[in-house]
Length: 392
Image 1 (cartoon, rainbow, N blue to C red):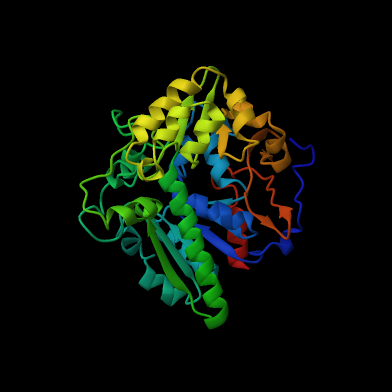
Image 2: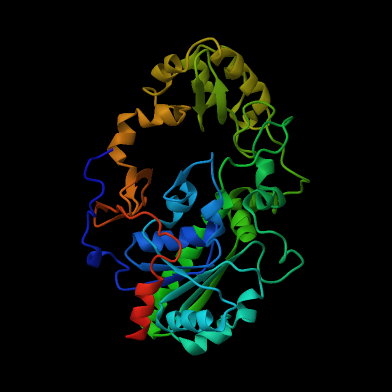
């Protein structure tokens, strides 16, 4: 980790979204991740939180890890923001938040359908208050339909969308992604919509509304597979019984155990693999059978690759241009010079000087990496200063 990673690499005023104000009324992951990316790109993000406890992710601890009085998770996804504590059911607090809405460029929320309307902060109300506002909402299953009131939680969406079914071998139970993939991708989709509406506003001067849902995001993530399935007469595609990596790709696509470590093989000609690996029996499979007979081919590869360490196979396959890679855990990844070259992590600093390592924004602007050294705010820490701004 570089010693100067606390310093901003670019002048904040040079960042693309400098001068914009974002109101983040969302909590947990999807909405806050959108606001985080906008903050990384230079926007000022004011996080409007409940007076009692704030964003629920402040107390959502991963591996019991805390930092500056809140969960490390909260800091990872809310770094660089300001906190404005308010009770939206209190008339005075709601009036103050409405003042913020009137001055803001973007409002992000993830309240259940109908809640913002009942609070007086729905789209029809705020577009009158601030015609230039970009109004961004994220929900679990959309604003209409029989699932609209289901809990919008990542694992549940993976299960309902078919996403969890795609992973694992044919005889395995469904396997969900090991992280909150629909939350994070929904946040990315929301961010795209916000940026698109900001561009349109720059032309027309008018604000707009963008909505995404975790379910629609999960469906879109499967566009390759669903586009095939929608045009085939099949009940469901079959997962491979051996080294399943993709339900519609031919052998050798998948991950294989070796004598030491695991080896990932992507698309590769089976006859060429047979020559390189000393498996002449693979030559008996014609190219038009590499999908239909993928389990038989993969079984041959599985049994053979298990006889030598992964590095031995890599030394053969990589020089021959075969798409392959070792399967790395985090310590192995972080020991790689390639990881060091990316400068992919940074440190954030709390008010008391405590430090925490986290990831950085993956976007580069004008060739420069975007670092943000400021930790997430303490609950309500910025309300007094923001109130003074409103009174000015």
